[in-house]
Length: 364
Image (cartoon, rainbow, N blue to C red; front, side, top):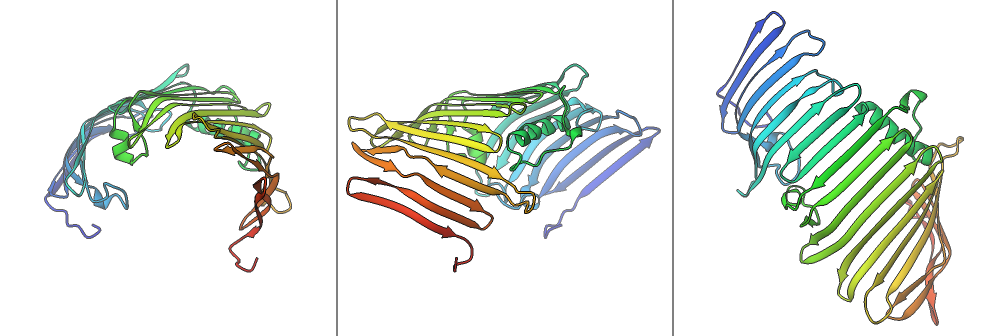
C-alpha cells in the first residue's frame, strides 16, 4: 500500500446473534499492533468496546506533510461507548503512553489522554484530560445546533460575510459553556511548532446562549525564544439580536527600545467593523501611535460579489518625539482588484502617499 509492503497480518471475527467480537494482529515493522473488541449489531444504541496495543505505526502512509510525516507513533488505547452518532454517544476513550518519534530519532512523550462523553436531555458534557491541557464542554445542545447557532450569530452581525442559514438552523434552547485550561508545558509548542511557549497556565472560556456569544482568553506569561510576553488578554461579546459585537485585546511585548503595550478595540454592527489599534513604548522619548479603521461590507443582490470598503481615519503616530499625521484614506477591495486612495502620512517637510490599483492584470 503506497509503496510499502505489509505482511504477517491476521484477523478474526466471531458472529453471534446481535453481536460480533473481533481481533487483529500485525507484526509488520511499519504496522505493528494488536487490536480486539466487540460491537452490538442492529441495536438502536449499540455498545462497542475496543482495546489496541499500537506498538509502532509508521505515519508516512497516513500523513502527507508535517513534522511527523516520516515518523511513527505508539500508544495503548482502550475505549467503551454506547451509541454511534456524536449526539448519542456515551462513553470514554483512554490513550496511555502516547509517544511520537521524528524521522531524526527524537521522541515526544505526549503522556496520557482521557476523553469522556455523557449525553443527556438536561445536561450534555464532554471532558478531556491530557498532559498539555484540560477541556470541558457542557450545556444543553447538540453538536449540530451548536455550530448552527454560532454561524447564525455571525450571519446576523455580518450577513455579507456569512451567508445566513435557514430558519431551521436556529435553536434558541442551545446553551453551552466551554472551558480550556492550558498548562505550563512545552508539549503543544513542540507538536505544532507554535511561536510561543506556555510558561504559565492559560485560561480560555467561551459560552453561547440563544443569540449571544462570549469568549475570554487570559495568558499572563508567554515566552517567545528569549522574550517574555506579559498580560495577554482577549474578550469577545457578540449579540445577534441587536446586532452588536465588541472585541478587546491587550498585551505587552519587549522591544529593543523598551516594553511596548499594544491595545486593540473592535466594535461591530450590521456589516460594519470599527477597529482601533494603539501602542506605546515605555521609554524617555515619546513613542506611541493609533491606527483607526472603519470597514464596511456589502454583497449586492445583482452581482453577489463581496465588496469591502476600508476607511483609514486621521490619527497621529509618534516616533522618537517626532509626530506623523496619518492621512484619511479609502481602500476598496473587490475580488482580484484593490483600489487605494490617499493612504499615507506626513510631518513637517515630509510626506508619504500611496494611490493606485492592484490586480492580477499587470496592465491595470
